[in-house]
Length: 394
Image 1 (cartoon, rainbow, N blue to C red):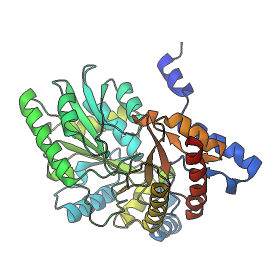
Image 2: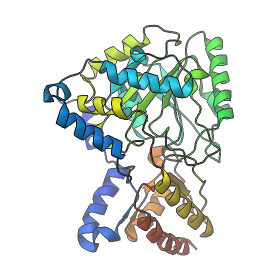
Image 3: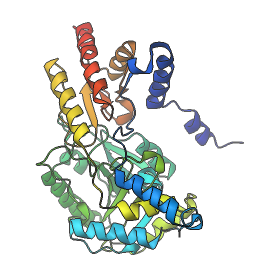
């Protein structure tokens, strides 16, 4: 008999994928240019020229035996050393290659980290709404229990809600900042308050509570006066899960890492991470991309288009009467449905060949997510449609 849980996962509907499929079919009828697809977080900004140059140089001047072969399970030494040096320079840390394990993107990093941490079915993982829907799958399938905390009205951290959610069974908390789907960056003051709360709860319950920082959007900061707190410098039991999918526009190349600082309470955690990667079948991260990252780790993304699209949509939607917070990072807008029914709002948008994602899967029923990592022309064309939809509600 086939594992029924896996069958259910394999056949469960993905709202985001269904919207993308709907858009592809509609494009055959009305033309691709007339379907405004804001469903997927697929970067529209091309990978930086340094990435293209690195790939060409590697393929042309290195032996295929090198870039097509396995690396070690943790990753190539040169790649991990380059990443450690980059982090040390930026954040004043003292990492070495041994603090890093290369992964197939942030999703693999999260699965590996949760597999390493969850040891008992009573182990609880706190998530902060709104959140990436796959957290639920990753936590459940690694044997843990998800505990959700509602945000404040402005989508910032609900410290009191977190306090009430933490119990003696809390093993870890996942924090995603800049956030998918809201685009919010949790303030440094709030993150310091969170660190103090976690320290207090560790002392109360007598065991480590790990802070898993999910950071694929760390480099996509769209406001000059906003800082993304680097939490290992403020809370010792922090684990970083990172990906270059967004910062270098490489979602299909699946390259990221797990970082475990030396300061964490359990000195066996990195061994557990390595074992979890092995148990889950992650033999090694893509070798060619490890060589690329070694050369491009200092390359910064160009967020000019994302800022332009953000401002155009935010200003236009506010003028039309929509309730939407101005995102400080990533490339998403979280828009409140006029009647609080995000599924209905998404369906109304589909009638105009505009695809936006209802918020139920993100833990926020009243909101829809719009991914503005698209051509600016699509954002411009969307505003008259949003105006028509608002008139339909009136």
